[in-house]
Image (cartoon, rainbow, N blue to C red):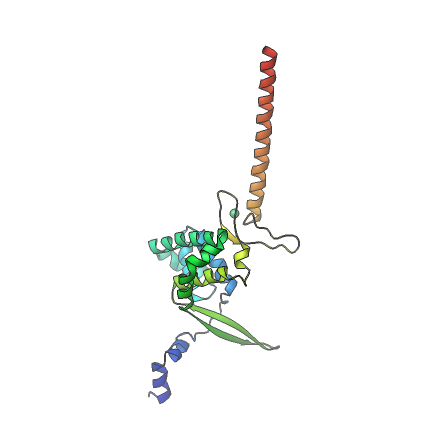
Length: 227
Ligand SMILES: [Zn+2]
């Protein structure tokens, strides 16, 4: 039997949205900062399985782990994802190096993305009160990426000013400044290993430069003696 309420619910787009998105999920929801970090990760990786997994996660609004990779492995390499990643890498680099240009270039894209995301609160009642989380429902990957670009461009949030790129030549990953419990944030290298690798490389370079200088001096002395 179809009640009057059911019939109107089927016609009402908001009711349709609410019932379509009503499923209770146990997995943690992606927060604003998760969107920024995962979109940076999307710009960083060239591995098709990772790109697929990140797309699934960003569009679902839920932190997914192993199960995403299972589906990703069955997918073929998707040229659309690779093209989107390449475009995103350029956009993020513009945000990092020239925010004013990025604001002008990306204004339309970011506005369109903002119009294509729904955000729905979910509540957890605890002993001390009610905790409210928000689940994002981007219409597709482009909407999710646009949302993260918007967050990166917003001067009132710190993401844009925290945006860094690893200086190790063979890395070049985007990351948000790493803030240790004490001391200054680290902005040069994406991880401790790359900081260490850069230090080793510069000490090897110093040793090599020293040896070359010594060799040059020795050969000059040698020439002088022969004269
Ligand atoms: Zn790195």
